[in-house]
Length: 221
Ligand SMILES: [Zn+2]
Image 1 (cartoon, rainbow, N blue to C red):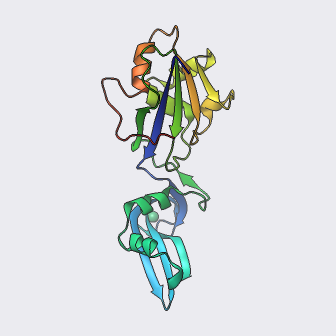
Image 2 (image 1 turned 135 degrees about the vertical axis):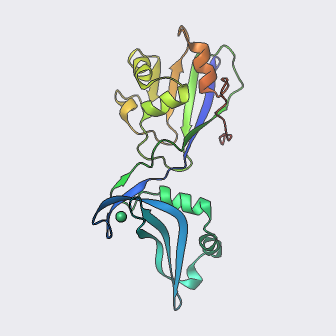
Image 3 (image 1 turned 120 degrees about the vertical axis):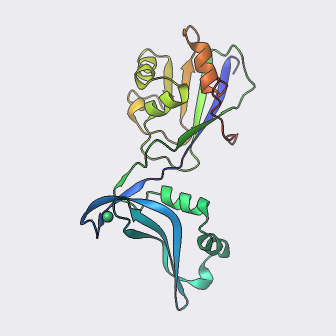
């Protein structure tokens, strides 16, 4: 579309969700953090594999099952190798999967990064920004307005004002989109035409501002 600058934001977090569990040593509910290490146990021809977590207060361990009592010859050799090497990719993927976890706490915003990439040919005078959010691994509970504030380099209240006055629109169009968690593939539009700080917003949103935030290029599909 002429006049539209298409951008992808790829969101990654190094702080994985922390399950809230009863700690046997603390005798209390505690947040447990992934150690990034696996434990493999052979029992005859059966294998168990766990990702090791530690209580954030006392270091007590909790073993999170990757699989249990699996016949050795049915385990993919590549998976077995990754478990033995404490492969960081597998550890991260496992730690970010919250499907089997009842209660968890966000690992914090400190490790959150937004890698920005311009998808369409750069339109210098674009009147509309189309931002597509990509999350290769889930970043649970990240509110849309917080992410937009981070990506646009403005405050959350400024994001709220842009939405209320119709400059920011969302897919799907929902009144409470700002308070909802961002999902992979979410699209957001920002009208620039007539905005006083349009040049700065365009530069920041596309990663072309003075402080380059782009660390990796987003997959373009
Ligand atoms: Zn503890």
